[in-house]
Image (cartoon, one colour):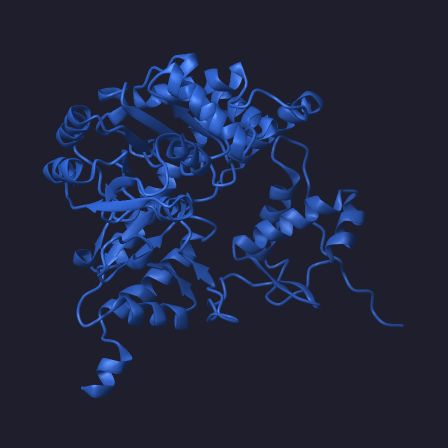
Length: 464
């Protein structure tokens, strides 16, 4: 008779750690001790769930987590196999898709079991209130959600009265509401000459004209803004003043004060997109604290807690503008999801959001050290608390040649064309070092980028 094959089973202990994380940790431990060997096939997810008396989704989540850590490899139609002690070499792109995608600007995902436990506890607490949350709520968030939003904005030194606070389904929703409230087709909006692609997309949809303003290491040139106000009579100034996407420039306190002064003199409202404002441990005050009566302040949770948490808090200059914004939100998205808003409120009030923010900062610091160790120091700009880099390509590289090189390596980055308003974008790319990518992924990708930066394009090499 054939010998009965041993079925691997993880050791599950009672405790506070989620079971799926225990399974992933057991895979890692058993690889180290030799109980699991390279290319060994793990039990099918459904079979392991039956053996352990668990829900199928728990085991599926555990295998996904183990694959994210580089412990196992899922092969379609064959099963899940152990990678061994070392993470396998990252393959080249498959069917044009990047293997290491550094194009989406997302914070590093949570690794800490304690943080994940806090998040899941908050999720469970919200689930206990599910029946009431399935109903229509106030269009701009419940009173409790607005209070939590005001509490969160105090971390940026802002004091926002309830009548000025709105809760929206993400920062893009808030930005759409502001633009539709302040503008009509053909209107001009001033912004950085390298600006957020989401603004460009909305401007295209709404028929708005974007006028890019020159920037330096201190931020938007206030003199250029004043000249643009006189020439174009813009309906608003949009800015991303902290860790600007894509260059990571943070506007100085002096420049912020100068811009508020110019905006007030010309009667131009400011749209402050503070997407990354919570990441630095210290920095200049928000523009909304300098000119609360002329600033529409937007702060989403996507960059400082998690990209899937589609909640943003918006402070309007006054109650009248808040009412107009509420009408716009109702017409486009009806309301923020009560379930998502309740989860954000829970995490803000119980401290989970602060723990998540701290974890993102710590992981960003580690990944920035990897970048500093691997990349040529004179080729990129960033910040210790940022999770993106702005790489200026040395001659003779063009961004088209560099993108082709990265595609061949299976690495996804974003060319400057996505951000530039000028006819001739700079030879540069944005690289995100957060998201789903592990530290090993980041190091591998940055080593490929560094190798490219120290070489010349293949077409140039062929001519030489």
